[in-house]
Image (tube, rainbow, N blue to C red; front, side, top):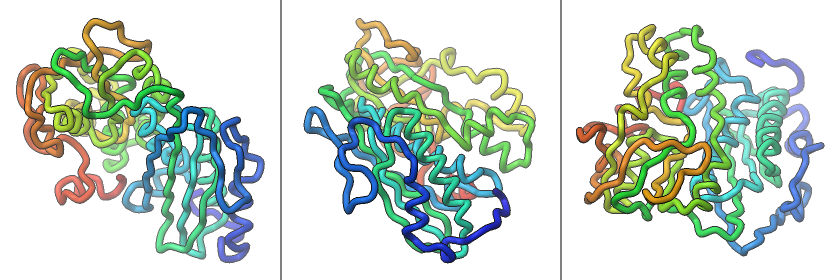
Length: 337
């Protein structure tokens, strides 16, 4: 798909492209009215809907010489689905906006749409609508709807001193994959795949809510940064256990190959879309969750710089992860995220 051929978007027109995107896609039972109408209708059994939206812009968040269009579509679903999972909801529907230059081969959009549709169906959700517009580069904008199923939403503001901080999923692999791509090193394909197509632990969010978690967040910008937001919202501090977060062998090998620090990937690398939550200390953690630290008294601090988060009692300083408009992080990741 690096140099696809065939008709372009301008050759066949907007509506045939949209028809190709939705044709044959399966819909879950929560979709009452699907594509083909002015608006979709999605059931919400308890009257509440969790909603989140994200954009992927070519050259900023993905590169088509690194990712296949299908991988871009799957990544768009992953980063959005993780957001509603983090509030304890189950993703049920996705609405997709695509922008592209008129000379974009239709095959590129077909593959992006296929990736989105397949990833949505794998988690029991449907693609219920969207739009296609002309733009200067390929843009994928996805909105996800989630079903709380009677549960109270998990927020960042509920953490309490004494809580256990736990993680579902891993951190550092996506950042390692990005560093390898930037260096032109293809010796660690599984780490590169983690960056190109993250797979969030979708079911872990609802499981945390059922178990009685006090707070939860998606690790999209970095473990320290995102836990910093919990600290700020809850007025607490978090101390992480290095023994529970130690980089694995493949991360250490990749770091040695690039002369990098694997701890920076684990603590500040974004886009793994793991979930971190704060649980009461007197309840068992749900399956798939592992303890990584403790919540203590604190004032929260500056979440953008990991305020309130320490490692083995030592306060973190400097950026805690990705910041969209920070000059330092923009330079560091401008070729991908």
